[in-house]
Every structure is written in structure tokens, then in C-alpha cells.
Image (cartoon, rainbow over all chains, first blue to last red; front, side, top):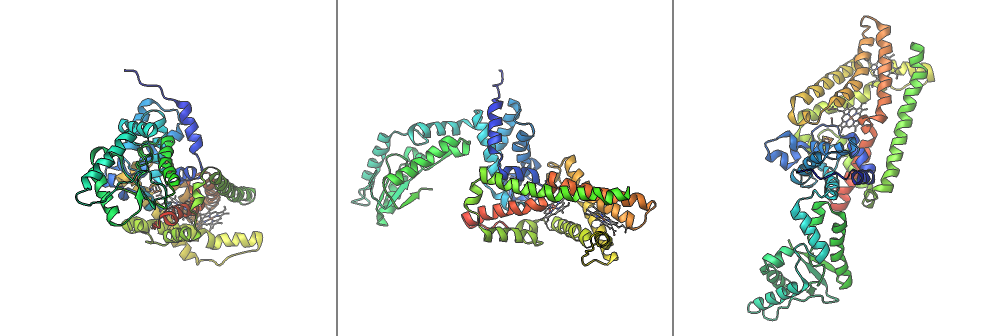
Length: 250
Length: 216
Ligand code: HEM
Ligand code: HEM
Ligand code: SF4
Ligand code: SF4
């Protein structure tokens, strides 16, 4: 099977766009001192296999992309994808252990952005991002299904807590409650339980009818456009309904 | 030759060092303002200073406490590296002769010992790069080159001071290698002398001002 062509022009554009003061300084001054090694759980969990030490992950990805001016092969990009998506969670712990405070996670996130532009993000993340873009939630649940699920859970809770309501799109409520789309699809009981807590606490709350999924898998994929869109849906819902605060599940 | 390396060449070296670093720091600042505005959103002097000072104190951070031997070595290396050339008697004699200024100076027996400390710790740092797998994997020839550039003025200065065989040769070699080091600073990772303060200020503010988390 022929390998897909690398869009070198796009990589070059991204690299130029990304090269701000931080990346420039970090890539230059990393002392290769390995103060960061023991801070990374990937490194520890693999019995201190050196290929999981944080600075090495940058050296194999972003540093290499800059050194080669973006002119890399598909095979090299695939190796980078294994590292950027598989060997680092972008947790930022190592930046607390580095004498220069080099933020490996931010650089790995940048690499994901580049790889995502080449279609190399893991399929599950790509699909979720696509769903979020098209339907406003990562599981492509329709508004109808969402409303119905809430109604169903309202009825289910009736016996335990008479009078409990699950408000949707109630303007002027105090609190906006947003959750993970998986809860709606696979664990609807979570909605009932959260509603009970909010009811018992006497909260004046509401779900929005759009922007109720607070997950952002596009961020993990490195898809900046959908990442911004997903966050903005929740932000817009809070504005629209004039709430004072947002509560998120998980 | 002696005239050249202590005259024009010294001016060139110090000029490139100071000017190069000034250009570097200022251009990085403006580049950050243009492209990484996020750096300034949460900038805080307080968190920056705490983050810098903690990492300038031996064992001031948890990371340093987890690698005690390396921390002792690298602090001995850096402290002697900075103090020796500035407070060295011979350097201050030259300063006095040329510009009529001179600083407080170290007794020669002390500066000799500090010089030996630098040389020994550099050897240790080099061996560490070979011995430990996690350091070895990120090490390339460039890392050894920088260690050599840093160590060379100390080795040659030591040999000159002790009038080891050909004094004139070692002296000129010493001055040249000192100048090479100064020139190398703005163009290599050695620029960390200044950039350290910038990147630490950033991470201190980023983690501290934004999330209330300490970076030490
Ligand atoms: C750029 C101009 C420089 C000049 C003109 C210069 C000149 C000298 C002279 C004349 C000596 C004394 C040799 C003797 O006692 O006869 C000396 C020693 C020494 N220099 Fe320099 N030097 C320069 C740069 C540097 C730099 C950049 C460093 C280190 C970073 C350095 C580190 C030393 C040390 C450590 C010794 C003394 C070694 C010992 O006492 O064992 N020098 N230098
Ligand atoms: C205020 C000034 C300085 C600060 C805060 C500083 C800080 C650091 C830090 C945090 C590291 C990395 C980790 C470590 O090895 O400890 C390092 C490494 C290093 N520094 Fe500095 N430094 C300073 C000045 C200098 C100067 C003046 C030189 C020599 C020109 C120098 C040469 C080196 C070298 C060669 C390494 C690499 C050591 C290795 O290979 O393991 N530093 N420095
Ligand atoms: S950000 Fe990545 S490399 Fe750093 S500690 Fe977390 S998982 Fe490890
Ligand atoms: S601790 Fe920082 S400077 Fe040292 S190797 Fe890791 S990222 Fe580079």
C-alpha cells in the first residue's frame, strides 16, 4: 500500500506560526540534564526505559520537525504520532521538575496539532471531534434524544423525589449544568443522580439545549478549530441563559 | 599575538557576548509579545521571583532533592564557574592595568582550588552523560562540545598559572579559549545564563498565578 503524501507546506506553516518566544527558548536551552525523567509516570511505569523520559519525546518530535524544517517522511510522522498520542498525556508534571521550567506538554500538544493536520490523530478522537463540530456533542446525540432522556430520568426520579424537575434552556437560572455526552448515551442514571443532588441543594439550575457537552476531545486530538468551537458552545449557552455559574460533571 | 588576543580580540569577544545577549533577550521578549501573548496574561512578579530564587538555592526544589548527588555537582560547578574568573587576581590585575579598576580578589591558592573543582565537576558531568541511560539518550556530540568549551578556559588557565612547560603558549591558548566561550554564549545553549530567568519567570507565573501551584 502506498503511503499517503506528507503535506510539507502545511507543516512548514504550522512550524513558523508556532515559533514564538517560548518554543524558541525551550528548544534552545534544554540542557539534556534529565532532571525531568523521574517526574513522568510513563518513564516510571516502563521500568525507567529511557525512551519515555520527557526531553527525549520532544527531541524525537518537535525538535526534529524544526531541525528538518518540516521535511519529514510519512513514516517519521507516524513514529511521532506514536509518541505524541501514545507516550505522553500532556499532563505537565515534568515542567515542575525541570530547572528551566520547560513545558514539554505544550510542545507535545503543538506536535499533535501538526499531526492532526496530516490526518494522523487517533480515529476515535477524530470521530469525536467531527461529531462535536456537526452536532454540538461528541456522541452525535440529537437534541430530541437529549430532551427525551432528561424527561425519562425526570419520571424515573419521581418516586424518590416528588416534584423534581430537569429544566432545559431555562433563561435566568442561577447555574448551568453541563456534562459528558457519554453520560447521556450510556449512563443516563447519572443525570437523575445529579438532578437529585441539585434539587436537594435547592439550586436554581438548568441544562442548555445546545452546549451541554463539556468534554473537549478535539483538544486531545490537537484540532484547534473544533476545540475552540466546543468550548464556545458552553460559553455561549452560559451567556444566552444569563447564568451566574457553570457546574460540570466529573 | 599576546597583544592581539588581549587587545582587539578581547574587545570583540566581550562585545559579541554583551551585544549578542542583549539582542537575544530583547528579540525574544518582543517575539513573545507578538506570538505568545498568553505568557503575559498571568504574569506575576511575585510568582516569578519565587520560582527563580527557589531554583537558585541548592536543594531549593523538590526536583533537586530527588537527585542530590547531581545537584551537589552541578551547583559546585556553577558556583566556582561564576566566581573564579570574576574574582581572580590575574584577571583583576589586567583590569587594573587597562582600565584602572579592580574588584576584591580571591587568594590565589583558593582560586586554584575552585579551578580544580570546575575541571573535576566537568569530568563528572561528562561521565554522567555516558553512565546514565536517561541522560545518554538525549546526549549528542553537541553536549560534549559545550562542556569542552566551558572547561577549556579553566584547564588552560590552570596550566598557564602553574607555568606548565610553555607558559606563553598556554597563556595565549587560555585567553583564546576564554574568548571562544564568551562568543559561544549568545549562539548556543549557554545562553541559558540569561534565558534561565525568563523561562523560570514564565513557568512560575503560569503555574503559580494561574493555578496557585508551586514550581519547586
Ligand atoms: C578574555 C580574556 C581573558 C584574559 C585576558 C585572561 C587572562 C588570564 C591570565 C593572564 C591568567 C593568569 C595566568 C597566570 O597566572 O600566569 C588567567 C588565569 C585564569 N583564567 Fe583567564 N583570562 C580571560 C578569560 C577567562 C575566562 C572567560 C575564564 C573562565 C570562564 C577564565 C578563567 C581563568 C582561570 C580559572 C584562571 C586561573 C587558573 C588557576 O589559577 O589555576 N579566564 N586568565
Ligand atoms: C546565573 C547563571 C546560571 C544559571 C542559573 C545556570 C543554570 C543551569 C541549569 C539549570 C542547568 C541544567 C541543569 C544542570 O546541569 O544543573 C545548567 C547546565 C549547564 N550550564 Fe549553567 N547556569 C548559569 C550559568 C552558566 C555559565 C556562566 C556557564 C558557562 C559558560 C554554564 C554552563 C553550563 C553547562 C555547560 C551546563 C550543562 C551541564 C551538563 O552538560 O550536564 N552555566 N545551567
Ligand atoms: S507532560 Fe508528558 S512527558 Fe511530561 S510528565 Fe506528563 S506524560 Fe510525562
Ligand atoms: S529537565 Fe528540562 S532541561 Fe533537563 S532534560 Fe528535562 S526538559 Fe531538558
